[in-house]
Amino acid sequence: MYQVKYSPCLAAEESFVSLLKERAAYQSSKTAYTFLSSGKTEESSLTYQQLDRKARELGAILYGLGLKGERALLMYNPGLDFVVAFFACLYAGVIAVPVYPPKRNQSFHRLQAIIKDCDAKEILTTSNILSNLQQGLIDRHELHSLKFLATDNLPIQFSQTYNLPEIGITQKDLAFLQYTSGSTGNPKGVMVTHQNLLVNCEEMNRVFNHQPNSVMVTWLPTFHDMGLIYGVLEPLYKGITCYMMAPVSFIQSPFRWLQAISHYKGTHSAAPNFAYDLCTRKITSEQKASLDLSSWKMTLNGAEPIRYDVLERFTQEFASCGFNPTAMSPGYGLAEATLVVSAVHKEDTAEFYRVQAEALQRNKVVKAEQNDDSAVTLVGCGKTEIDTQIVIVNPDTLTSCKKDEIGEIWVSGKTVAQGYWQKEAETAKTFQAKLASGEGPFLRTGDLGFLKDGELFVTGRLKDVLIIRGRNHYPQDIEMTVEQCHPALRPGYGAAFTVETDGKERLVIVQEVERTYLRKINIKEVQEAIRKAVTKDHGLQVHDIVLIRTATIPKTSSGKIQRSRCKEQFLRNTSDDLFVVKSSKVQLS
Image (tube, rainbow, N blue to C red; front, side, top):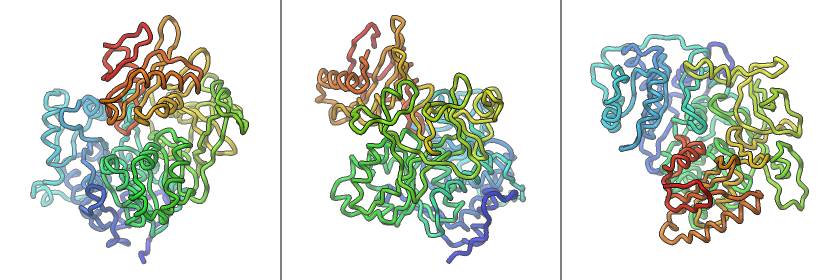
């Protein structure tokens, strides 16, 4: 049995540097991280002692290069090289900036914008990524001072030259910059401190009840907040073992995720809503028969709108594998609040609330009658822990909403990050909001919802709400209607937005087609199915429909649909369209 000498995160001198040191001292031989190649073969592992040693060695190099206090981009393919580099940055006092390496022939615009915004001095990566990076960035004269370091092939003189002094990292120090995904605008660097991380990890620990023998299984990308903080940092915070695989391993075969949980007796994991949907659609009966999910105690569902039908199907489909419905933990969070704001406790069952669809359009919350076929079932995202406070605010009057009103979700507490890097005006607007009464400051999330008996229900995003003929419509509801109306349409890969024509807001649908239907789709049949379904469920006429090839809809780096970019492409006639059903004066090339 491992004896852990460590106090809760609220100790003033605590940081993730001191946590790793304690893990290396008191749990030295315990496996910290194991990477599964193709989601099933153990490719590499690190004990806490090995991680500490490798992080110190690389940290000494970074410190010797004069990078203390500077920003360094961490650009790695999935694997343990990233984990070592991240903790090396913490040891050396370098502000890490996790990003995903662009693929060959992929645009470098977002990467260049991040480098310029944070004034990065170094890119930490691997040898096989380095040449592509240098070629893609070489023509940018404003990046002439940027340097590259392949951490998997370090010159021998580095380790012989540099020593790592005790820097004295505190809770107030920045740990890393989490660049937002850009679903509603240009990426911004969220400043996350050690205190933000420690408080958020402690909150998750209380809600999800990690034990010394817990086992994490994750495929989430480490450049994204949920993959980094819950998938990588939470295991170290609690001193448990983590099995990691590449996101593409899951996407190619969702079975690999559940197979790893079954094989390694995984107790905790996390994924966006689409992942649970993918499991129900892609995992066969034969594969289910080989799974034992009885060890799975908690799985976080977050990072995108959570759908009641997906949760119900998943729990029903995998009940025969031993999956316990109480393991499903819907949650809500955002990078600006480090990660989790609220989540359903491990011991509790998710709350569902059926409300009148017509009332939602008026920003009202009215419980639906049992025989109301048009009712919408919302999923509760739990409550908060520690000092996090949630208030529901009218975004126009800046006053607290009544219990039956939908408003913007505002958050305060130690989990709220410090603001956006070098963006004072945007930081003040988003992180320092105050109610009309003067109470504050609060973080304005831009998300809409309401509280019911302390439980948070999220209904949509403020900027994405569609106002048609004076009524509010949530695009995700329309998108769900569309994807379910015909088997040729790919679930989770559609966008609903409005365009103004003749002084009126009109509805446009952009939707991917399933790959198996590309050669046999009946355009008129799909057109009719979409129009009938949207009219029946939402009382709306569809102005235009754009059907696009598989895997071409604009998405953020974390997988969220970029509705604003879809709209821009539509208006610029640059959408990558496969078929176009024209119904108005708006024309696509």
